[in-house]
Every structure is written in structure tokens, then in C-alpha cells.
Length: 362
Image (cartoon, rainbow, N blue to C red; front, top):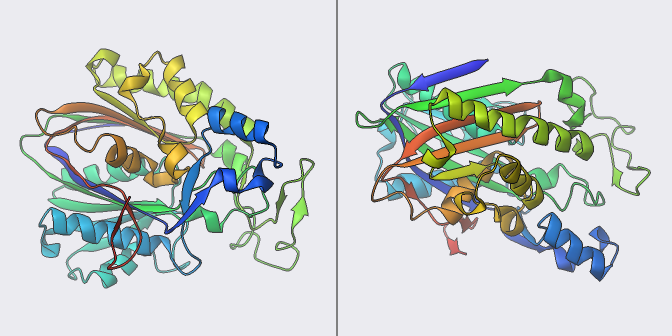
């Protein structure tokens, strides 16, 4: 198992930028068969309400660039002091090069700043943090972590199981050396046998794009998608989540020599309200210690969901004393990971809608 302990490293700040088109589930009767009773049930159980999609011309790099620009300006950080940029996304601007180099160019970072991409989904924030912490542990002083996706472009709009789930967003996090920071603990897991539970089957190099792979087909439930759209086996993913996530939570607590009572906040990937609250109840975590309603406002934001939950619900909580936070992400791969760390004097910017120079507050 990948387990790590780091010292003298902290999160300096976080920001989140959302796609510019607000979608309201109640105004999309095609996703609930125009049945008001079903609408009420889905809103209450799953949390469907609103989410934000990016325009066709807006990319993940655009969202992350604005999030990074806002955060660096707020923290008054000189770009020359950033040793590395990590981009975590499944929806890059190009097959090559990666989004980290796009941001490197757009924000005019110096040649001395390293840049690279990682391909992860819902576990990506924890995996990205782990990588940044390792880099600082090896001698770097400051790393900019960018996470996010525009999965609304990967889901077929006629797929009732996928299209209503995803919200587009990009996040930025600054991680840096801090001699006063306490220990941080990470645990990460993978299971390649679960590849077919969540994937985009065609369109890359294993199964290149053809007329056949672009053909839309209806499944037995009437959901329409092509092989180039994202697919998720909801039953398998739900079983994976409930079998593995409470277990990992207990393991990271034991590894960090921490009790549930010691943790100030539990921040889980916001897959949907039902999944988050079910994990918390199964692990016997008080709901008031964990954001669980972010999905209802922003949808499933993939690798940006954890920083989004922090910026939305906890942004004023990290001032007076160090707060112990457990973060946990899980999803495509299959992959999952958790960390326990302290957050003090962490700057969390209010979520913002993408608008270039016109910064729109929610």
C-alpha cells in the first residue's frame, strides 16, 4: 500500500472557478420523464438541483488558469517562486502537450518552473496533493496544483444517468514548505480490475474514433450514448464506494494515530448527496463535520470537488487555530485515496463563475 508521512508542508490557499452556464435540473424534464414526483425524489435522494457547464469554447485549462491567477494574486505570490505546476485532469485542451504547459505559457511562468500532467478523476485531488507533498519533501519550496474537468463535454446530453451528474470547474491550490506545519498522512489505493466500471471506451488510441464509435445507441433503459461518451456502471461504482471508502477512512485514521473525534472536518469527494451521506453514516461521522450538499449546488466536479467543498463550506474556518482535516477521493481507475493534515491560515477564495476579466461572484 502507498503510505506516506510528510512534515513541514502546508496548504497556503485554494480557489475554484465554475463553468459559465448554470443548469437547473427542474428545468430539464427529459432527465426525470417530466414527472414531478420523480423530480422531488431525485432532488431529495441524489441531490440533483443545479450545476455549472462550460461553454463549448471554454476548456478545463481556461477554468484552472483563472483559478490560478486569482489565487496567486490574492496570496501575493511571485510566479518566479513557484517551483512546479501539476495539472490533474481527464479533459485536457490537447492530447499533447498537457494542460500544465498551457497554463505555464498563459501565465508566463519562468523556464525554471517544472510542469507536468496527471490523468485522474474523482481521486485526483488527493493524488495531486500527495505528489506535490512528495516534491516539496524532496527539496522544492512551492508547488501550484491545478485540478478540474469539463466532463459535460464527455457525457452524452441524451444520457439521463450521466449528463445530469457533472458540473464543470477548475481549481488551484498552493502547497509550500512551512517549518511550523505538523505531520501530514496519506494513503492511496488502486484496482485496475475496475477499469470497465467507469470509462470512455473509444476515441483514443486503443479504439480510435470512427463512424461506428460515434454512433449513438440506446441502452435498455433508454439512455443514449456513443462509445466516445463517458460510461459509468452505477451499481458497481456504488458497491465499490460503500465497500472501500469507510474502510479507507478507518485505515487513514489508524495510520495517522487520529480518532474521529480529533478530526475537525471530513471532506469527501462530492459524488452525490446520497453517496456522501451514506459513507458518513456507515463510518459514524456526524454530518455537521462534513460538507455534503455541494453536489446539489455544483454537481459532481470530479477532481475539483474537494477544493470546491472547502471553498464553499469551510472557507472561513482556518484562521484561529490549526484544524485537522481528513480528505478522501474515489473514482475512475478504480482509484481512491485519503489524507489527514492540518490547515491553519489557509486562504480559501469564494467560488467564482468563469468570465475572464469579468469576475462574477456567486
